[in-house]
Length: 276
Image (cartoon, rainbow, N blue to C red):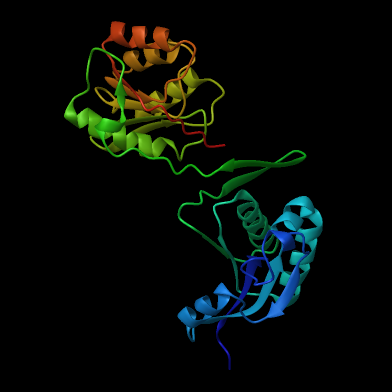
């Protein structure tokens, strides 16, 4: 009795050993067993799993004939009924990443088949959300900050060493929160979150309500710039002592001035997070 996990592997024309850019327009085709990098995967998997079918599709074909390509790939997956779909590895180019994302969407969302996408670490891939009339596509947010040296202090007042640790911690957290996003932290502990608001000051109010007093003398991270000083004023009312934010608003000077008036230290990151 064969108890191996059945895998269908999706690759493009290059990894499928058909050709380069001159073959990027080939429609989906299938091969029994592993092809190209699939052989390495099969060897590594040993007796636990095996690639039973490989789907090969040209990068240009998939992105220029997305609905047709998806329909053909869905038919193959429905017939084979694999336990797992493997999509990739992918280059740093966007078309292959988009195709892998599209295959993952078919397998996981439409057929309830688990997916592993083998993208290179340098390739940010894409986050895709369904919206009316199509897909919202954005590059995955892989930006991070690891030290104070990567930050720009924009106020006369500087944060304490512990506050700097909290600021760096909260900046890592806020990128995973729905925009508009505000997070509050103290002693490297998340104490309040305001997520998914159309108004940044409303996100600040909600975060403060969730923190319920634990934010006093703590810090705030904002995933994007403050368009007005009102959120900074609200932060001060809640006892916040330092803020980290991207900067870049046409009212940055007003925001910084308000922070100075209220005794709040402020860092700019010069990069924004934006999670839809």
